Length: 168
Image (cartoon, rainbow, N blue to C red; front, side, top):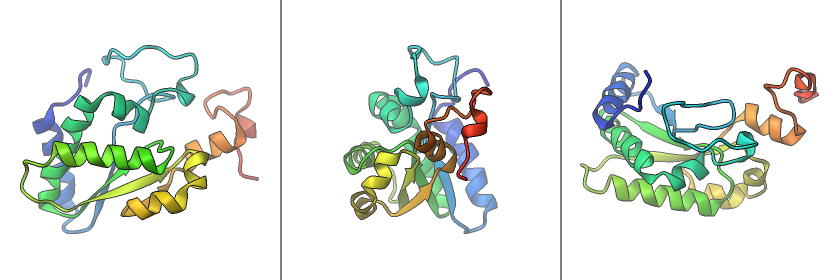
């Protein structure tokens, strides 16, 4: 669209999805830019290696205003049906707790809604700390694309090494 959606626009889109699911749970990945996901209209510094840079949870923790907008839209949509939010590129339990705290703070003035908070296991370090993370999270999900890329040390978007991007 060429611009970030405000809270109301995000809410309308999430609400439509939640309502169409008729009571079945909906899971939404929080904003994750960087690596192969760019938003050119955001004023984000270029990085030499964006796959290992400020993305996922790291990006959200350094841009709380973007997190707040999305969290509020999701919480409002969660009043229409079960909703889970997934924390992308999570590195450890401390990041999970910090992000969940910011989300809870952002939605504190909204009517009570039961959001489920989930860990996306895409970074090998998170897998090594899975027990601690899952003590904090309501659910977990494995992000195979990034996890495999980091386990194999292969850029899946680089044609000259893409054949090495395999679990075999």
